[in-house]
Amino acid sequence: MWISCNYGSRNFRVGAVTALANDYGDTPYQFSFDYGNTCQTETRWKDDTSAAFMNCQSCDGNDFGYTAYVFGSWDESKSGSVCCSDRRSIHAGNSYLLSNSVYQDRNYAYFYGELNANDAVGYSGLWSPDNYECYQ
Amino acid sequence: MKNKIIKRIIIINVLLLAFIIVGCSKQSVTDTYEMLSMANEGNAIASTLSAEVASAKSQHVFYGNQYSDLSANINKIPFGSSAVVENKASKVKITIAVEDILIANNFFDIKKLTDETSTNNLFNYLMNYDNENICNADGTINPGKYGTDRCALFVKLKIKNESNVESDIGLSALKLYNMKNENGKLQYSQLSEQCNGIDKIQNYNSHFDFYKFQPNETQEIVLFFPIENELVTEYSYEFNGNTKVPTNVKTNGTSMFDVYMNTNLSGVTPEFTDNMNVFKLNIENGVFKK
Image (cartoon, rainbow over all chains, first blue to last red; front, side):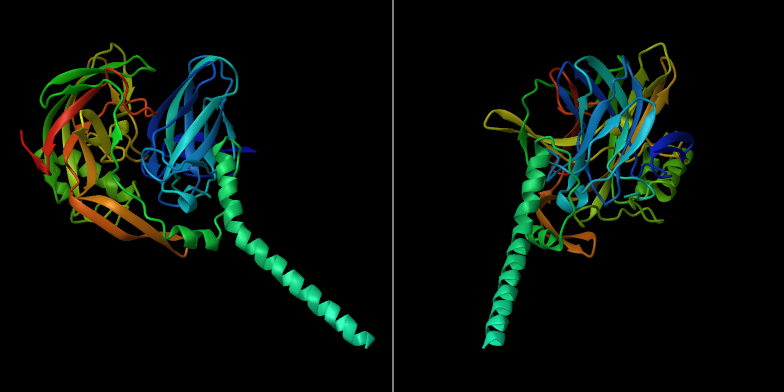
């Protein structure tokens, strides 16, 4: 189920709940998928149990979407990484909140993405390890 | 006699049931870690932490600020020099030069690098829109994730948009690192997370992410990073209810050993790539020397 919500001065669609997404400032990301590779954001410290936020703003080719997971690690270099969320298919022009257990299980969060097709496509947008309204 | 046999059978069954329940409970921690391990291989999972696991993890010691080998062949840019940085996805090129550095105990010292309006805009954003609780009303900096004292590190940049179109530049992706040579190998350790704000903040009523440059526009911009005063070498945490509380935090000297700023505007790993321009900030052993 998708509903609209107000995100700062902009409107985004966020899954299932109304949420003012974004907490400690969002971080830009650019995933460049190229026939089978996977992409990962850098890590950010996870301060609470709220859902991670991903706002996929643009796609430079066919929008097959990519499957995203939230991973957790002990430190910035991603040691002890584990998957801490369900998967979610991400498409350009939408925002998503992914429930995860990074705060309970690890220290740092990052997004991991796999393209939903064997192709070369780039995606860019913003992400945050948490969200303003602490949607879980 | 028959009743006695029935009673014994009931007692034995109750005992067996008790053993089974205890056995399952002991296994739950291992099961949780196995689930996490499976998830690491790509399976989707949303694990719930049991009190037992939280208790076990509170005894775990973590090591902060670890150095990793830097395999990429980077270009170190001396303080004061400029270099072109390309956003590999958007192909937008900007020229960056580090103009000045300030290490301070109070946010309002940023006035030494920028104007009153910009100072107030960034402070308003930090106090009213960013809920990381970095500053107090008097400008003092609050402790961070380790619970240790922090200072404000301001980096003043001169940035030019080299393209002929309006461009959004993700300045919040810029991060600081310590670097050192160890046995002939260059190593790095992350000093800061993403930049926590800029003085020329735009749209701060929503949040801070991109900075919009006009075609060929040049701006002087001050980045704000809250930094731990001391290098955290070990730490652990305990759960107080659902909240993590740092414990057993050990520090060793200054956190700012030899500081550099990378230019990974894409925000994805690897953090350093071949030919990436990395700016030396001239901060060694906690002291900035121009």
